[in-house]
Amino acid sequence: MGNEALQISLPLVLLTILTFSAPSATASASDRRYNVGDHVPLFVNKVGPLNNPSETYQYYDLPFCYPDPVIQKKESIGEVLNGDRLANTLYQLNFRQDKNGERLCQKKLKVAEVAKFRDAIVNDFYFQMYYDDLPVWGFVGKVEDESWTISDKGTKCSNDEEEDKEVGWKYIHGDVFRYPSNMPLFCAVLGVGTQLLIMVCILFFLAIFGVLYPYNRGALFTSLVFICTLTSIVAGYTAAAFHTQFSVIGWERSVLLTAILYLGPLFVISSILNTVAISYGATAAIPFGTLLAILLIYAFLAIPLHALGGVIGYCLRSEFQAPCATKQFPREIQRLAWYRRTHCQMFIGGLLPFSAIALQLHHLYASMWGYKIYTLPGILFLTFIILIIMTSILTVGLTYIQLSVEDHEWWWRSVLSGGSTAIFMFAYSIYFYARSNMTGFMQLSFFIGYNACICYAFFLMLGAISFRVSLIFVRHIYGAVKSE
Image 1 (cartoon, rainbow, N blue to C red):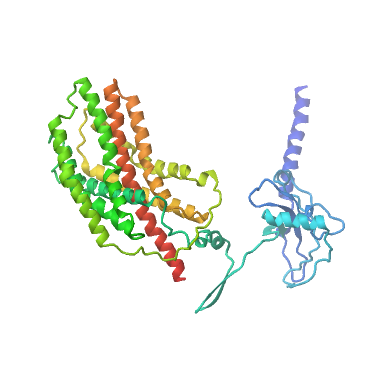
Image 2: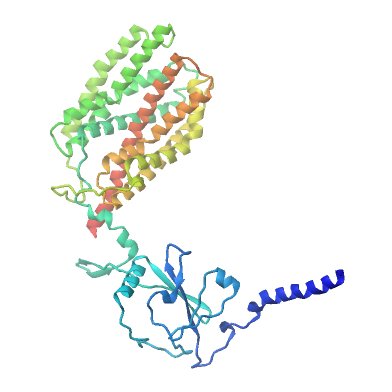
């Protein structure tokens, strides 16, 4: 019985092998050698939308010219699973015999058949044929937009699809340099952000050259007070100079907002935290004499320097250099998809730069709120440079995406996208606190309060940097358009 089963199973196995190997053993059209005038077979296969490779239909589902009868070519299992449905055609192609402009057939299309072709063209349908077993692809049809550019060098015609996709930002050249809403606040953000950037750079300079070293108690806060006071002139000048590029009216308000935009919230939070420290009897409470000295320095040095910077900015005012003239009435902005709106761009613009500094941020927090001492200011400065570079690159990219959808209100968006890294920094500080062993209301209030001030400073600083970089980029691309 066992021998009979063996005798039966062996032929079945051989039959199975021969069945599946037979198609590969047959000669295909590509194995032939053609002489001049020999017929070369052409088979049509399938059609379908370009973006949906799995959605394919038989070639003659569209009302093309077809032979009578339509003969389907026999396919192997693999061809069937691949969705191939080869059929004969009316084309009579002979080896090395050119044909040009010959009519294949004459057919009057019905309304439904025209609709089929129209839908196929709109949905980017492609067709596939096999010429001597070589695949050939092409589009069923294509809608092409033609445009002409006339210059003194002659007439140029462009119908490039990629170029058409970039036309969107060119349409809004008359609105892209329209100054933003709430101009005084915008100028104040630029002024304070520029001041904070200079402060951070000076602190890094002092730390790298050994002036600020970890064991010099109080040197950091003393330097912060005097550097903040001396750089007040920069904040006032930047705010007034930028405001007067658009209007000489109201620059005083911009300078005033610059004076309180950061120091106002800082004073309020510090007062609250100082009250908490006094109630706990902690050494973190600022004595009255020290507080009075800081207020006198601010009143008699910082405020006059701030006002002086504003006056200098007003006296040295200049016209805003825009490559394109601004239209009288703003262009209406279409409703944008959710992923093109402000909150989504802020998420993207903040997450990636934050991911680049997360490791150093952890060590910095451990140094600020723990017992570790940070002794590598050079590494920290390099991380700061990386943060600025990544923020600038991302903001330029996000600004270009915004302009491409004809949204010309990029001024505030660039500030928010660039400054959003600070939101992730603050969120990470909450995570750091949750993972630490810190407890108690006083510690929580100090941790949240001072981290909020630090992150707010980074928001203003990175926002100002992002806008400056975006402004350079926008001027460049629209200046290039004007030169064309």
